[in-house]
Amino acid sequence: MYGLFIRSLGPLALVFSAAASSQPANIASPPAAGAITSEQGEAKNGQPRQDALELARLLNPAETLIEMAGRSFDQAFQQGLTQGGETAALEKEHPGLVDELRKATRDVMIADLRADMPALHRRYARFFSDQFTPAEIAELTGFYRSSTGAKIIAAKFANIDVSGLVAKVSEDPNAKVSTGDIEAMNKGAVSTMWKGMTADDVRSVLSFGLRPVARKLKAAAPAMAQIETEIANEADPALDAAIEQATQKVYERFGLGE
Image (tube, rainbow, N blue to C red; front, side, top):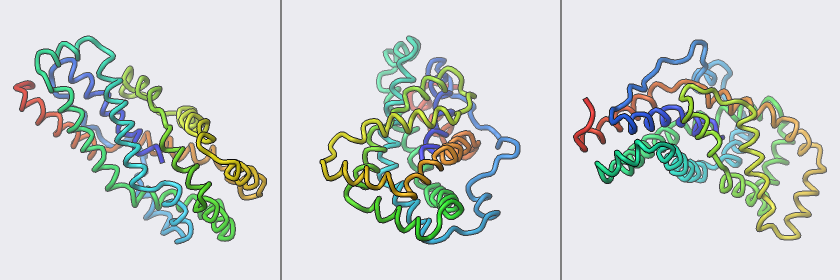
């Protein structure tokens, strides 16, 4: 469930530009034409099955995802703000400004992510309901509730690297996230999955990988990446406005802005 977090990188890139120019950015934007929000999709498609909802929550644990988002946000903010000399000069003139911007926008992003989490879980649950039978969902849930499955989930969120996407949106705040971007993030996270696994874990993973449901899950990966891409590219005017308001207050405290 990276898409919701990635969606915050667009307005964040404009915060970088604002810091460089010592001016708050007007980053609010209207919804993209034809965009379907999580809640709209829910109203259209109905409620997901409870077993699918449990699987969605298991694979995307709220607090783990929020912790990962905060960690990645700090990485993204630091990377974006150190790409130009203007920001260093501004920090030298106004000590503490950069960290205040980071904390203010981070709090906004985390609050938005936490508020949207239930709708996002339902969105993924509808996907699982469409793709897998109740028996298959029960099998997937059983594996990912095991100690080995838990290690896989933890590794996925612990090793995500958003630096490539940060560079992309820092260069062009209007850049669209592609399925290739999502797949690269997934691949990078999974590549370190084997670290810390015991011999029993390896056997468990290999055994599960031979199951028909595991092959079906792997085949569904491109469709999952597409969902992530759609979420990442959806407009979020409320988040944009909240970030703008938060940064405005920081600039005012430091005597900057209009």
